[in-house]
Structure formats: C-alpha cells, structure tokens
Amino acid sequence: MGNAEAFRKDFASRVWLTYREEFPPLPGSILTSDCGWGCMLRAGQMMLAQALILHFLGRDWTWSEALKLQPLDTETWTTTAAKRLVASLEASLQGSQSPSDPESPPIPQAQVPGSAEEADSHLKEMYHRTLVSWFGDSPSAQLGLHRLIYLGLTMGKQAGDWYGPAVVAHILKKAVEKAMDPGLAGITAYVSQDCTVYNADVIDSHRVPTAGQASAEGSDAPPSLQNNQPASASALPDSRAVIILVPVRLGGERTNPDYFNFTKSILSLDYCIGIIGGKPKQACYFVGFQDDSLIYMDPHYCQSFVDVSTSDFPLQSYHCPSPKKMPFSKMDPSCTIGFYSRSVQDFERISKELSKVLQPSAKDKYPAFTFVQGHGKDYDLSAALTPEKREWPFIRDPQRTVSTAGDFVLL
Image (cartoon, rainbow, N blue to C red; front, side, top):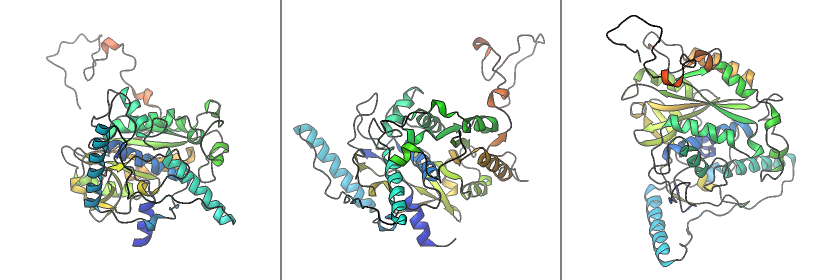
C-alpha cells in the first residue's frame, strides 16, 4: 500500500536461504558446497520456509531485527567468499582448519521474558529459530540441503546436478512427508498432476488421521511445538495443513505476456507462498511485484556454514535486507507456484477464488492450471492397462481392427 518501511520489514522477515560452503559432504558425493548449482533447491527451501511461517507464526508476523540488517555489498560478499575459499584450500593442504570469518555477525543474547507481550514475543522467536534450524546444512536437518539431495537420489538426481522447479516440488513434498520432527506433523504437501489440482486429493491430504503421527518424545523442538501448535497454526481436529505446489509452464521459449497479469493476481493472494523459477539456469524465489517487474530473493550468495544445532546460532545470514527486481519479460516460463491451505474449509475457499482468477479472458485460450473435482486416479486413462501396453503417448486399443496409416497424438 505504498508503505516502504512496512514492505522492508515484511521482506526482511522472510527466511533467506543461499549457497553455503564448508558444510559436511552431501549424500553420494564429496561436495561440501552447493555454490553454482543448488540455487533451485535453495529457492524451494525459501518457499517452503514461507509456508511454515504462515503455519506457525501467521502472515502478519515480522522479525524484530528485520530493519537492523545491514545492506548487502556484492563486491564485499564476493571478495570475502573468495578469501574463505582460498583459506579453506590452504587449510586442507596444511591439515589445519580454516580461520573463522572475522565478519561473522554477533550472536544474539537470550532475554528472559517478563510481561505477557514479551512472553509471546519470546515464544514466537523460539518458533522462528526452530523453523530456521530445520533448514540447516547438516544431515540431521529435517528440511536441509542434505535431506533434499538424499531424496533426489531416488529421482535420478545427485549433488551437482541442475534441478528444475517441477523436480524440486516433488522433492519438497517428500521432505515434508518424511520429516520426523513432531513439530512438522501438522502439515503435509501436495503436488499437482499435469497442471491439474484434484480437489479430492487435497482434501484427503488435509484429513490424515493423527494415529500415524510421530510421538513428541525425544524432539529438540521447543515445548510448544511438542505439545500442540499455536493458535495461528492449529487447524480442525484430526486434520493437517497442506502446502499445494503447482508446476506450470507459462509459455514456450519465453513467458507469454498474457500471463503477466495472472502472475500479479496470484502473487497478490494472502495464501500464495510465492513462485520458484527465475532466468534460464539461474533460479530465484519470486515473492511479489512492482509495476512490470517481479520482486525476488536471490540465493546466489555464497555464505559460510552455520551450525544451527546450538541454541543461540546467529540468524542474520538467514534474512535478506535487499530485494531485487526482474522484468516479467525475463522470467523463465517453467516455474512452480505455491499455496498454503490451513484446513478443508480454507481449501474450498482457495479453490473457488483461484478458479475465478484462472478463468481465461478473451485473449487467453488456456488457464495456467485448473481445479478438478474428484481424485487424480479417476482420470488416469492408462491405469487399467498392463505395463507392456502402457506405451505413452501412444496408447493402443488391442480390440481395434480398423487399419490406419498412423496414430496422431494431440499434445
């Protein structure tokens, strides 16, 4: 609404996840950094983190230190990263550890809450810190890079590969589903099929029984996460919130200008958690827009590993003070859109509102994606075929006796 300071505070409160170096080797490799190839995974982590902020803290939450962050200096960051890399290489040759970064931010001191307002602020800060720790760069982090790489191995991807927005959507879904921390038991994820969101499948995801959820014993989450979720995160009994991920393609080689206004409408919705995409081979996380430009968070900064297992690890490097802008015309058409649905009732409202936004205009021939009643399996035309007969895209009917010169498939 034109309030620049409120925008800065809201933007800087979002969790910023970037390249890191000097962390433990990634699964199936000897890589200790994702610099140069992990940007789409980082963008996906940022979108997932925003969903968790909505889930635990609410859309209106902002970090108390957001406006105290120092502006980024690209040259300084690049030089510092280069110096760290050289120091790391020298240390590995000499068999000693590299020196710590003298420019590391100060560790915030814990404060004992007094009034009810201070207690609420302290509780939210515990959620904030726990949420960030889930994205730490260690094998034990529930939603960290190591976990995503491990899950990607089952999809034929490995550390060092390029990950597209659709693949990342499926990896994020697996990561949320397989997370063992009881704090994440109240949320799951759904990925659309062929640009179609099947309403019954999303509703089924909301209505997962609590019997199979993990016990809270032995968790490192704060007490409030172990017992029950805060008021802002609680849904109906025996239900879970759902992160809805929709991989789409908004054009051919370039984004179709007809989708620009659609993208603006999507990013204006309070339950939209953003879009992961970017330029070709350069991923970023789109969080908003201004006029004809997208506002995004850039993962292309190489920062040092932070040990999030300590109770007072520094948070400054997980928040970005400087937004960036990109013209809509430079946006890669391949992307994944994210939404957060708190309950079945919430999803019913979301599907109705989005269906109106998705209605094609006279100029547009096709919506970016659609909502369909029923389950995805109800529309699977090849489900009844045996594997040897399922030859996509040519699905032949063995009962056909008419001879033809060839089959044509409409893609």
